[in-house]
Length: 450
Image: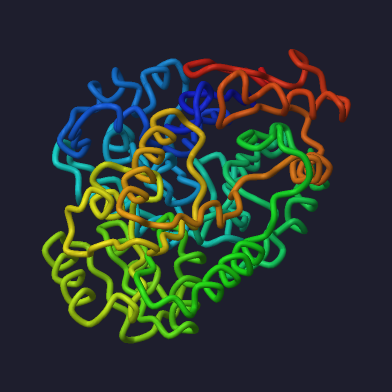
């Protein structure tokens, strides 16, 4: 059976991921993501009102026109998890394909919300839920199957999809860390990865996220970030002024830890910001997390400002606002607080806890710097970097290659500079660039079996 891989997006940057795998006449697309930094450099861009071709020209979503060179029919669109760099272009591109979107329950719910917010295109693809550990048949040949393997990442319900073909498995390895003691859900399913490496014809190809490939050691568990956060929160337990926390709104494990520790130190947690309300509300509705009954979640600007007024009236020392804006996004809640545009007044000595790391990209770094500067000008004290990454470091990469023993490796989720450490790592394990390690660019084809 012919096996061909189209590397469409995420092979020259971190963001706008999209890869298509053709097995015979059947094609499966993995991820359709947005490159948020390409949107943020323009003022007041509302992507939901824009045409896909304009977003492609902007470098914000994948240029999927290369799909016309793939001989075969798309049978499924498979996002690995709910981050925007993996699902953010579904509302712009999915309608071009007569295929269902297949994803885990939490991811499907987030896709549904993306599609509902779309103003330009009418996306009517079926949305099919499939849980980790399940398999479905792809196409009519009866020879190709799609399997979801549970992984741990900085969002719940993440998977690595595996396309089983007669020539061996194609494992799409974006994004994960090797977490054996996560705060929510199960540890990464390494047993299944090892089985896949030994079954049938083994692993034909492994497409891997190279975000942290140049960092030594292993990525710490989410439970490490939880302990760090607990230590910081208890260290400010006796402070009688304002404490504000921010983290990735999609990071439900971290949000749940913040809520728990706020209660521990006698403060009432409140989730503020549209994306906070969206992700946490969805996770609670689907029973992924059990928040206290009285936890307030407010996304609309007016209800957020009303909540801030109530906090100021009842005393800042009684609350922990958990807000959006850890990357310094111009319209996010924390940035508005720094600019003095909310009823919440920061005083000298108030604490701002960043339970997130700035995404290493110039636009984000600039915005975050500006946000911190504004907060400090109001007298705030910053606690930063209370975080662990969602991506594998060196030892995790060694473990995955050892488990899967792939015949071919395709680095992804980086630019050429970011691929280099991963290529070195692969070569130290006997692979060779140009023979079985394929460094590629957006818009290229890799023919694995002719």
